Image (cartoon, rainbow, N blue to C red; front, side):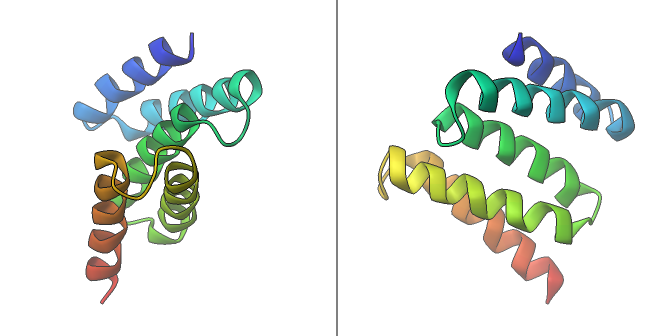
Length: 100
């Protein structure tokens, strides 16, 4: 269910329909947190997706803590050398760059 919601949110996101994507990303995140626990890599992916939605809308204050939480989860669960960690670092760096 969470994956399907995330996929539908991604579709709306790709169409620029952010108002439709946001509640779906949020619901997908809540399902994953409840089913898998707060520190699961799939939760990190959901956090990253929601953060990217906010980043795209220049809502940096909403995006930053989500990217940071995603990064902490991934560093803890998959290790510092994992590509998902690098991608999340990159997302956070882009956010910082755009705020400068």
